Image 1 (cartoon, rainbow, N blue to C red):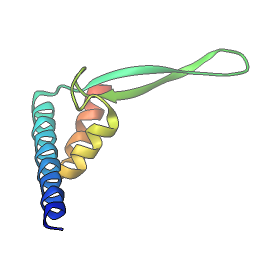
Image 2 (cartoon, rainbow, N blue to C red):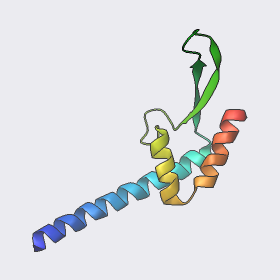
Image 3 (cartoon, rainbow, N blue to C red):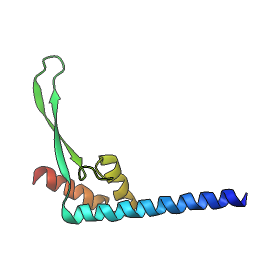
Length: 94
């Protein structure tokens, strides 16, 4: 049992260090204003007409925070959701 408890503790420490690293990386993304926006067409499926575009936020290409899920998970963990949302709006509309 002792070996199992040590293994669980080791995994928990690793996950905590990983989370801390992502939060630190996110704060760097926020301070450096490194978000990207990509646009996706909204199409009428019956006519094929483009009705508009949807703005989608992404982190730096190739980073652990490239996906919006990773970005917002890190923001919640680091208690910087409002800062991320504000930068998203500035990036899209700026």
